[in-house]
Each structure stands twice: as structure tokens, then as C-alpha cells.
Length: 613
Image 1 (cartoon, one colour):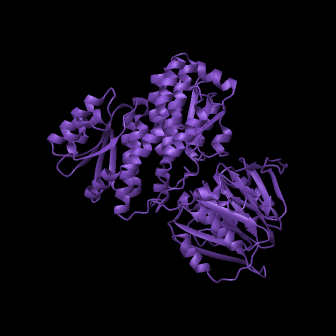
Image 2 (cartoon, helix red, strand yellow):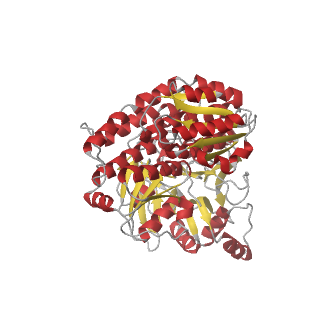
Image 3 (cartoon, one colour):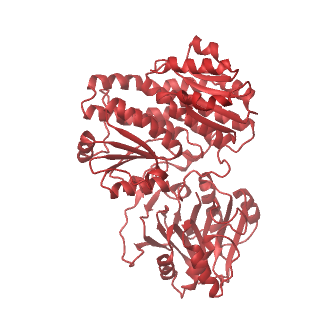
């Protein structure tokens, strides 16, 4: 959600802060700001704007700052409306301390009342300004000491980065649950919410753990425990991907670029997890994890948003091919439901960012109850990847568009391969059967490329329907989760109301909505157990003059006869059909959104990485 950048070094800080914030835009934000010390160190120069970073840059154009250290922030409103006043950074009562913050201070009201009684005057409605006043109230020449004392008073989950007027070449930061990563340079150092803000300058990073404090100067990075100040030795990791991978190239939007990168994601996944013999191997799993999975009594799949839809597909897969009882849960519900989970069970957590607050809390709850935990994650080095007992990477590369596309396909294929792998471990599938599945899987990159090359039908349907304000999506079996996903994609980037249903539920309510104005997207690939049932649903929709848009196997005349618009996909095995049906859904949502002039990469009110509850 909010994005943080801090810098101390020999270069002018403002351009570095702005570039860092631009690389954090994808996280979602409504305002942005920076703070650095004025050239004579007489006070902080603070510049904030509501709206896009381009407006902040325009305000800064020609302003001589010449500061060599500073902090910046993109805000996604939690306490207080989006406004220039509520934007970060915030200063303490006497302007001696500047603070940026990601997270929620749960006891901010109590602290604010206390600080008001001591004479503090508040200019904003944010909980962050409370932290700024609190830190300054403890400041007596040592910023680190003041931050430690303040953190001991604060309840909640947070990441703070701060500067003090009297310490111009020092930036300090601390974290609890919300991510921070340190960038290590030569004669300069950085701190940010994620590595994307650091890669233009360094690929050497340190990932901070919870309740760790870091002090940055030009030459030093000192990490210590927040509670007692004991030094912590950190490993420096090298980030493998480059900043150029997070650029749009020749595409008008990141989302479209990422849709077209999906064949490469599938190919990379297959090359990593499928052996030349056709068998499946997950080399990141040690023998203990493999033995546990082999005898596990139950699998819990836990995730949020699009990853939850992947988890629903995973539930079908684990039960069908590994024959393990499986439950799929929304992370925010799982963590509070007191789930009946034991040390014999396996909990699988799916997340693109590896930082999703509810999924992280659910992971910790599962570990507390003794379950073995496995993370399916896209971002290496993320908190969930580090805390899980084992991790499998989805290999999608950096995904910048808020609406997940290539990470979703990576999750679907990884789950399918992992379910087959577990089926093999448990002797539910022969190696010969697994090789048959992987032979078909090897064709998926070319089949997705074929769908991307024949999108005229999507353009035609979107052109006819982009003014519609309400859509239904229907699917069965493995493609019921994709009905949910198609509806989510459309609503989050086009702002049209859309709802996904299991098609068998149509007569239990949704059929009341169908008339000659109602578009209904039906997922009807051939070769599934529920194919004829889907045709019956379509007949019922047509009888009520609904507008049917179908995703169907090439050449299916039965579907074509019932449909106003058809998005064709190649034939494949049922296990892989969600991978193919997802692609036209993504293109359809994208086209509807662009025809309505929406900001598809940064939809309103949404954030790429949801790091607060």
C-alpha cells in the first residue's frame, strides 16, 4: 500500500527520492511527498501534493534543495481523507523530526489525547502525525533512541523512516510486520518498502525482520534489535532482476504488457519444475517437507483476492490428483476463525507480493498451531517467503499492474504441477501418468500465445458492451474460480459491477437478473465433466433473452449457436483449462476499462500490495 523511500549519500537527494517514489507508484496511492533538510540545515524542506507524483515533480521543478539525504512517501489513505495536509512526511511539534510511515497505529487516539494535553498541535487527521509528535517528544539528540522509545508505546503494525534536523546525514528506520528493505551502495545507502525503488541504484539489499532497527549513514548500515539495541548481523542479498523489467516498453499499460508476458511465465515455470524426463521436481523443498506432504492429513489453501481464486482451483486439484482433503480459505477469515488445524496438516499460502498483511497473519496462526507451512510466492526475499517452512516461487517476474495477470497464471500452473507432484509422492499417480500431464502442459505457452494473437472477438464484444454497468460470470468445476476472477478483473479496473457464480447456483437467485440487457459471460471449455450442464445453463439464459458471451473450445458449434460473442481457446486437458480461460477474461476486462478511459494500472482505491488490515 503506502510506499517509503529514504536516502543518505553524496548525491542530491530529491531526484533519487522522486525516482524511488515513481517505482513505488504501482503499490497504489492518493498523495505523495518528500522531506529533506534545507541547504543551511535550518529546517526541513517539505513538499507534498494530493494526486499523482507528476504533480509533486512539477512543484519541485527549479527548487534548489541540494540536500544529500531525505525521505519520501506515497500515501494510501487509512486515517484521514486523501489530501495535501494528510500526505506524508509529517513533522513533530517543533519541526525537529520528520517521519514517514506505512501501517496502522491502533492506539493513536489514546496517544493523540496524551500529546494534546502536553501542548502538541495537530495539523492533519492521520495517525502518522501522532508518531512524529511522539518521536520528537522523546528526542534529545539521538534519533534512534527516540524512535525506540516511541515504538515501545505504539500498538499495531508499522514501518517508520525518520530524520532529525540536528542529524542531517542520518536516516533511521524500524519495522513491525510492514516491509522494509535496505539498499547498500558505495558511499550511499537507501531504505524502501520494496526493492523496485532501489534497483535503479543498487541490487545489493538487506531484508529487515520484525522489530529490527536500522541506522543509515553514507558509509554504514547498522542493524540492531529494536527492544534492546543488540547488533544484528545481516546477509546482503543480490536481486536477480533488473529495473528495466519493470518498464512498460512499447505497451500503453503495464497490465497489457504483463498479459502478453504470460507465455514466457508459463515456459519459465515448466523449465524450472518439469524435468527433461517429464517428471516433476521441486528442488526448493527439503526431505522433511517432502515427507510431511507425503503423509499430510489435510491441506489448507489460504490467500486473498486473485490469489484466493487460484487457491480455489488448487483445492480442486489437490483433491482430484493427490486425493488429499483440502479447504480453501480467505486469509482475513482464516486467521480469526480458530481453524481446526494440527501438526499433521499442511497450510499453503499463496501471494504475489509475499507481504499481504492478512496472509502473513494467517501464516503465523498456522505455525502457532503446529502446521507445516508452504508459501507459493512471486517475490523472493519477501516476508512470507522467509517465514514459511518452505517456498515455491511462481517465477512471474515483477508485476506492476495492480490487477494481477501473469502472477495468476503462474500460480495456476505452479499449483497444477504441485498437485501432480504430491499425487506422485502419495502414489496416487504413476510417473507415466504424470509424464502425460506434463506433455500437455508443455503446449500451454504456445496455446496462450495463440489466444493473444486472435483477440479480435474480444475487441468486438467489448466495443458492443463497454457501456453496460452490470455483468454476470458463470462457470463450473475448475472454471468456477475463473468466473469469480473474471468478475473481479472487470470490476477492479473498469468499475462496472460484476459478480461471479457457480453456474449451478443460477436458478437460486441470479436468474432473476437476466433480461435482454444483461450480459452473461459463460466459461464452457469442452472436455470437462460439467460441459453439458453449462450448455443447459446457456439455454436458460437465452430463453430469457440474455446476452451470452462465451469462452469455448475452438470449433464448438453448440456453444456458438447459443452465444452473441465467443472467445475461442485451444483444446486442452481439464486440469489446465483455467489457464486458458483466464486469458480472454483478462483481455475483456482490459478492453472494457480502456474504452471507459480508466486508469487500468492504478485503479482508484486499490493497492498492489495490501500491507495493512
